[in-house]
Image 1: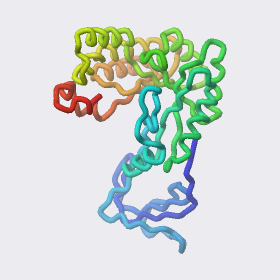
Image 2 (image 1 turned 60 degrees about the vertical axis):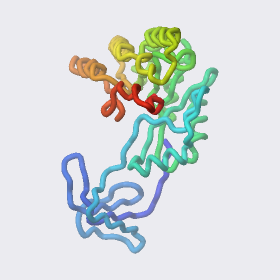
Image 3 (image 1 turned 30 degrees about the vertical axis):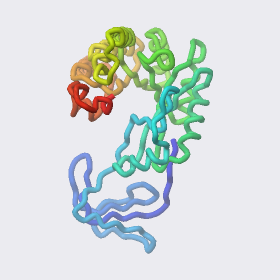
Length: 290
């Protein structure tokens, strides 16, 4: 969607080029932000920028397809902005981010995207958006086609977080049916809202309000049940679907089983779910893991 275009010619010499198939000892010539040639002794113009990558790996830039930069939930706001967030991403090798444009109540989907575009003007790398649909009642489904025109052909829905983001099963199914017609893949944040709410209320009633209770307020079952339900709805709508930030092994197994059965479903996870477990909530800095 938004692109910081450069016409400069860049030659990266003497590096170890990492491809999908091998690691090559070769030079890389970039023209107009596209790879023009790979090899040794590549010709270059007088104004070519040359980088010596001796003893270094040369890797493609990472595309981070799920970021939250300058996130404002109405309750809290992340401390970064688009300049700081994308500059930090670039330092980590990320050259494209896919963030989120949140539809506020009363907004059209186009207005949501345009508002987020204005916020992202300070970005230093390429970016686009998934669109968080929160207010698309029956009769307005055709607005989803606008997202393809705008270059943001994906939406995000939530099975939790009342009242701002939550979508009930009927709404999810209705929007999935339209997404299937337009070739849009919805992303779903899967948690059983009733289970999370009941567990949270029980903990609060028992006086367990501290950071250490966070994990118990959002049990694995809440995620797993919601994933199973969303997969069933997607199958009924014949709609491809992406499951966001799976946090348990069973969650991934559900996706694998659906794929093996022929369903078009993808998923993602996060480093913290691979490297940490619930014991972090028993430590002295439990608040760091919320």
